[in-house]
Image (cartoon, rainbow, N blue to C red; front, side, top):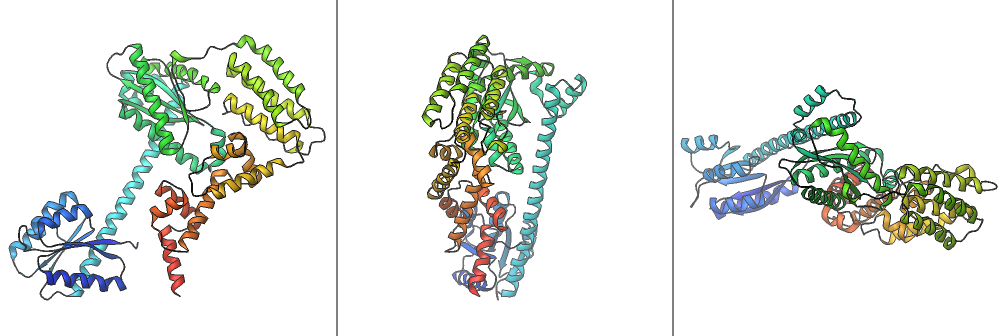
Length: 540
């Protein structure tokens, strides 16, 4: 693996420093792996600069004023355990050699005369050792990731079986002890984290990217919980995650309420800040003992049903539930029937929006539980397609209503946009909206674009716009944006050698690691590898 190795010189003789600087300058023409980044004229100055620069390789004299080279290395070892040290000496001393061996010095080179062959051999040896360190580090990191991924998969299965009541009490207790879930014996409450606009999430990301993001979401939830005390989090299913907040001492109801609202707010904030994911959080009441987990989950799940009438990024507790008016079901069914009668060919956008606003106002005043409301909304979607089926060119292409993970207002907005396109079939209005979206993306490509901002620009509901874009372009919005950003990065790299940070700033991608992943996904190379290939091509 080719990589740059940073080197640092420490010597009290100006002639030796000049000689080594000349050596590295000449070396750069035939071997670009080694880069000289600094120099010092004694051990004390060397320590200060080396800790700051963290070079891969240090070449140092032994005998110097204020601090000798071996003493300097002995102090640096704890701070920089992987840095390789090459000693230069004009003296043949058993004491120095013994101390050098104890300090685990890589090479011991006589500097009078200073031979380039000795330096080349020592640098190659250092590079080999550093490569091995890097390889083992990567393997260890890969192993850690694998262990973590397996841990989260096991947790997911455990909690799913536990809340369904499928795990015998003795097995649940043993597993809890092995996983060090000691909070079951303390006071705790269960909470549910639900991803908002999940239909759009499924449209925009590949299955692999969805899994990566869910894994990252689980990590951030758990880290947020641990920062405030103790607990655990796990991926539950689809757009939901389960977590537990634990505390040792008894708390009043108000103290528990405050702790839940505070943690919920942090989870919402952190996931939006770090992953640009919008979520809502619902807490159940306090419990104790692992036997109560199923009940604790049921309470949190019941509270989370209120999300249906929220838009996004809310925190709910048992003390702040909605009051449902299920007795208003027949009144709302009549409203839906009246709405269907008002729908006609060539209905204007304004008429349609006013009719939907009337439905929304009724529900704002008289909320009906999701278990009753959702089937009525699904039936409305079906009745609209039946009403306009005759002679409609879209009739054979009517998609299923993707309502399972939508909030009530998302469902109404989706129905509104779908209905307007459906009754005006043949005018291909959606193509104009997609073209407008593509133009908006093009002129704002260097910005951090979001699905919501683009949907607002073309006056469509995000869920419907996401579905429409993918149907029209055979590609999700985020995938399309990322592809365009990488094309822009390639154009920039064809002009000059940008640093990774500069490229990220130019194309509006904040995370350097994510940019590199995308770049390699689209080109097969890292940005650095691509630029090296371009340089070789240009030099021919």
